Image (cartoon, rainbow, N blue to C red; front, side, top):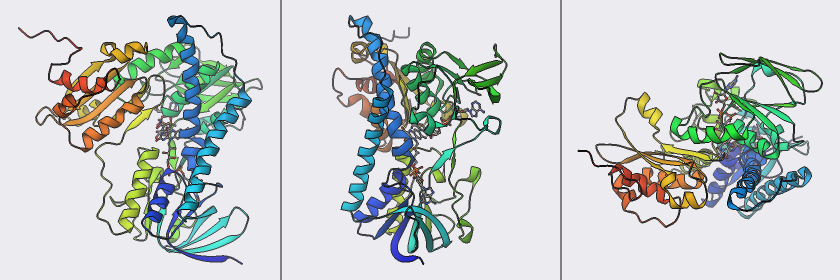
Length: 474
Ligand code: FAD
Ligand code: NAD
């Protein structure tokens, strides 16, 4: 026997896409049911993504700073890591935030169903609840927010507890003596940095010619330099041809033009080569939903799929696979369902890699402009000229603006440096508000802060930056 229920909007997946959508629907007075296997909303981001990784990166930064403090006349000695306490602190952060979301769901009268959903048809779901019972849920509209999971490389698919993905790495079972990270992208560099700070010898293998392929090269240089000191090795243009569990470790065979040591043994191997969409939702074949490139669910600008009653948002609909993009799409989808005139067409989605230094960008990148043959002006402010960066002993940064030389509109911003992730929001606002370089230059920024580097990069565009001397052309 199954229970039956009815809701205006059903939402499958309780990640930052799904719960943001559910909360807005409730705020607009629409009856909403949110379905997810966990006890509380949160999804990948809160349970095994953004939040636990950032908690650990905070600790990693502290460890690295405590080493640097020697240069400032303060010595702390080597850190002693109590792994059990570190793990329980990280788990506590996750519990606090997901519990808070559970609370917010109740306050808003969002009906939360713990379970997994499958389609019966375009207006009916069958939910297998965590307590083993079933519910048939009929709805007017549905939003799919089922997220993504790690991609798998067939040659690295062996059955060994030493092979881990991001979830395994975040579980923090031990501090391995050595760790091979396959993939020099967001996850590899963030989690590789965490383990390196805890004392692991970390080797990163990246198949392309540089780390973080999505970012402009000048932003990656300061990060690469610092990582070279922190990590055991960074092997570019390299892939892992095979892995084998040899009892006391994983033997990895490398392939690439610069490989010196063909085989090495590691205590653990973290595979972080990208993520793929969870679009194989059971029963989806009973609807008109179509999948596009790489298995992403195909949607229009209102996030509506090819089936008029079905919307989809977040990682399952495409890149960039970021939490804030998922949440924004969730809100747009709900507004579209509510009949508001909306579209998902941002000019700037910020990307932040929470390494040390952080790398952040939004809007048009230099690389993209080159590819599109677009004429741009680039104004760069080096952090060596920032008073605040010097007080922090972190001159290894750069703030740059990508500007339309004709209209002088700000089209993009890129930052590398400590705290770049907090600074990039100013770029998003400038781009979305169609700010001119002069608007940014003429807005008074507080002193001494790193935010002044944004104002001064706009001044650089006019050749009048206070702290950057440019000799006049004869
Ligand atoms: P998800 O958060 O993936 O949630 C989907 C939910 O749907 C899951 O709970 C899943 O169990 C559930 N689900 C799937 N199928 C069903 C079904 N049939 N029935 C019911 N429920 C179902 N992004 C950032 O912006 N900043 C970061 O710092 C950041 N750090 C990250 C660190 C790591 C290690 C990882 C792995 C990812 C990180 N991300 C980060 C990416 C971010 O986690 C995702 O972009 C975001 O979680 C996507 O949100 P979503 O709502 O689309 O789906
Ligand atoms: P990624 O796409 O960021 O990086 C994967 C890297 O692996 C790339 O550099 C790619 O060239 C490389 N690669 C692919 N196949 C390889 C192979 N066989 N051998 C060696 N290198 C290989 O993917 P990710 O690090 O797994 O992260 C997945 C996604 O999760 C990110 O793209 C991002 O959307 C999201 N994420 C975001 C954050 C954040 O916002 N700070 C943090 C973590 C994850």
